[in-house]
Image (cartoon, rainbow, N blue to C red; front, top):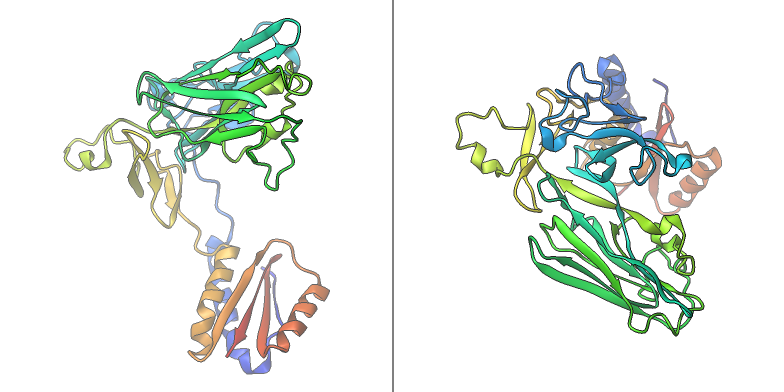
Length: 393
């Protein structure tokens, strides 16, 4: 462990002695050595699809998933799930749950990311409507529900009204409309989000497992046909701004047909409280050192590791002790304790941790600027990770 401490004035050598005491204890601890990565799959299971590891309770091979609800299929397909023929250039090993491609699974948040098709409606001035399609997401009978916290319903177009309808479960209808009369640059926003011109978006309610998306036009795109012959509507992860790359003039672009959406998933349909009433907990999904959390998005629950533990909470011993002496935790502990070491008449103001060491010129400039404010600057580096802060009266 390489340690560098500098820019400490003489009257604060008590801090230096304290820091070295902490580092000495940390250096003697075997926990400083990076622990092996947490276990994510059941023992003797090697559930991988391409480069992606499939974490339990999901799995591909029999005996490696919790039950049939979490069974996934790994197949060499194109993005539409076609194995024979199809788009050979985009074929690779992909995870599938029924007709949904699973792009990512998180056991920490109880979410998964999938590609969903978009609804569209396209016209030209001579033939009228050229092509149109609505789209339905049907998650009934699965542990998945559309995430209202992570997704937004988005419509694109200058003569577009888009609707989402759940006629099976929550039984609601909602949507938004977008009207404009001049060409719109969808990328011309500060955060890459929908500015409200040429696009609109709205939220979805909780508990939605069935969603039909449709697109309509007010005037068959007649007054905007030169720059916008199509309207689109889709559900998408609110942090994904790929829709700003959609060209409304290009109705044949493959990328206009799909977008990533986030699904919440649960284990079982009971609440956490119900398990406390049962003497037989053999069907309880959470392992040791875990917490049970009721789903905010319908019936069921998810598991998480208790504070101080990390790993896969669905495995019997999946949550293991977090290493107490990681580099960042050492720095955080030093900084959090500085106030107590120097006495009550000092206050501590912290900057941040940096993985990249700043140049000596940057460090010197900061120290000089703070000296005029009667503040003491300190700078600590541990194996390439840096922290700095202020001490003052």
